[in-house]
Length: 231
Image 1: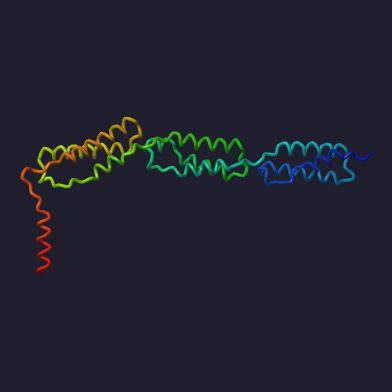
Image 2: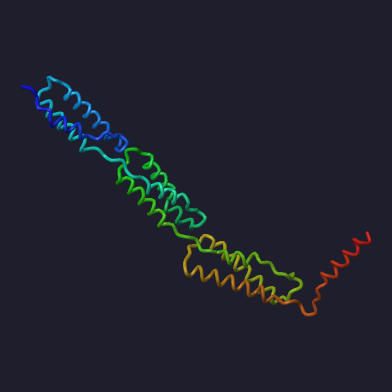
């Protein structure tokens, strides 16, 4: 009796042909089942049992096909994580977040042709979790600017009281800056930075010249200029 191959022919016709859309690990057994089905279909002496088995095997292999994951969002997540600058976050949070490991793991998933949608989603979530665990440093720019602003008068030309106040404010700012440079960006730290910067600015503006002080700098420049002309 000639085997009825209608179901087998229909299964072969409906089988996918684009290997690029599926993971290699799932495509390999499907391709083998499809090749066997084609061989049985071409065999004039194939029994009905062989035909039915080929149909079942092809259906199973096709059902086990796994579509390749869309990695666009993962690529964006990796790029975003790599753009984060260690200098912007507290040392403790950078170590604890271990962003480098999360990025390395995500890149492995991205490079894996057999990665599933679930694996891609997990990699994205791990990157997000690592980023969320980072703690931004306090912004110390205002305090650094205040420290870098040098007085326009010399210590010997200022009154001892105002110079002592300036030095005290400067030393307090410099000491605090060491700590605040690695401190988290909290309301308390922002307030401390603002106060230190203001105290230093006030002390700077409060510097007073010794009574009777006379600025001879312009005269000295004029003398040097005349000496150069006479030379």
